[in-house]
Amino acid sequence: CTRPFTVFSWNGADRAQNRRKKTNICLTCARLKNCCQSCMLDLSFGLPIAVRDAALKMVAPGPQSDINREYFAQNNEKLIEDGKAGIEEYEKTDEKAQELLR
Image 1 (spheres, rainbow, N blue to C red):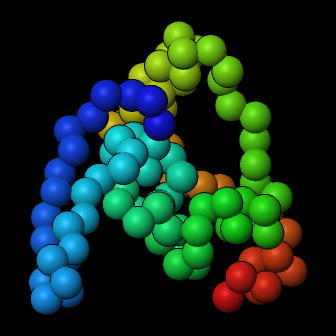
Image 2 (cartoon, rainbow, N blue to C red):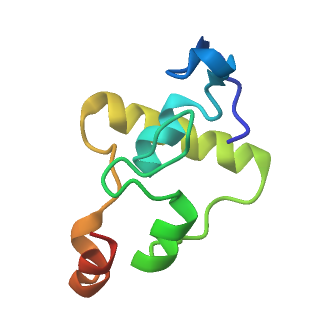
């Protein structure tokens, strides 16, 4: 994600080690990928996004130029606000791959 966004920072659960967590990607990209903004893990399977995408063969080529990426993000942000988009389409993936991840 190369879009500007507000970075939130907080103390994690293990305060004894003084580990701070922060957001790594914008909310729009996190909703499109169905992942956590800070740990970048899939919300359904608890796996890193790269592993999930490889197993489900969901890697789609995205826009390459900065302007096209911004246009793509703006359009998807509007769709998310309207409730027409927001999560990855797991229904279109292979059932065997879904069982493998569970």
